[in-house]
Image (cartoon, rainbow, N blue to C red; front, side, top):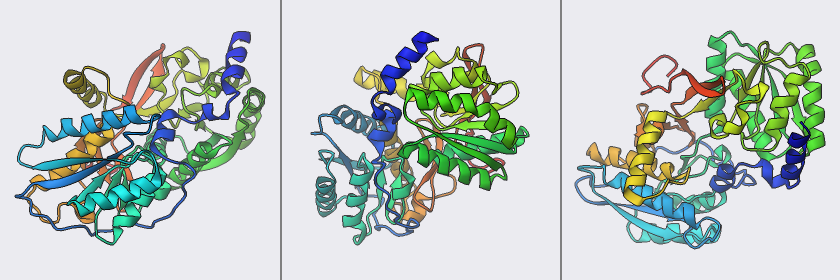
Length: 396
């Protein structure tokens, strides 16, 4: 236990450790622009001719050049699958800068792009979408920041709302009708708290307590030790934790909460992020029987294997988003429709097959992904409810 506290204290010293790498890479959490509902419009194309797609990535940004490379690689891998759809991928460097992203988006459209894939970060995506909105060009950004979606801007990144909805729906079928939310006092924590509260309302679940914790060993410890009384007084059947699985807070929470009376056999632990990516957590008492979501693992393994075969390395975790974007564009163009790149077409109810399973773009500019519900049993990941293969089943 002393070693656990020492490691946590060292890791928690920088507040930034509490933000997931994927969240920081995919969205600028300071960007809180509400662009309204996504539009139904877009350019008319000749599906019998080659369609130019612009890929905006931060090639010259030293902190993001590797993900830029993998996004481009994945996009080109998807093009190889398109069959009859003819896609011309034109790559533009944003340097990770919003102003350059806007300039490159305008240049791409001037050079014939009919749709834009990217940029990577939320602030870039907002600026890029603004400059091409009047020309009716839609933008499929790699961000997961739902607050920027709308108008001609769609986001491809997995959202907290999607995950929270999936877990709340699963929980209600298992008899869970009340939840306590445990969240970090930072922007990702607040985003997560909001997503959980809204998902609870949509699924008829009562949020009976919301407990923040400070970004320090002392703050996490103090909150973990108080959760038993919070759970007891509120009557919560479950505790929904927003923290990323790789954050230094998680071992403390999963060790100290059970030690202080939040029994996982009585109170259902639920995670808003993927706990399977952190096997070091599997032995902690709070992880046993906890619920979290995962993409379709067979689909994910297939994509990873194909990427390795083509490029000789593992893809960046965000690379699949570029593959998904090209796959969606190609599927629509292959239908032979001249409105294939409009908002109406992009938001088709059936969705598309992506690297992690089925997904679809929504009319508000966000997305929904078919997710599996998983748990930890005997220090192993076990699937409780498989990812759906389509959106035609119950609940869709």
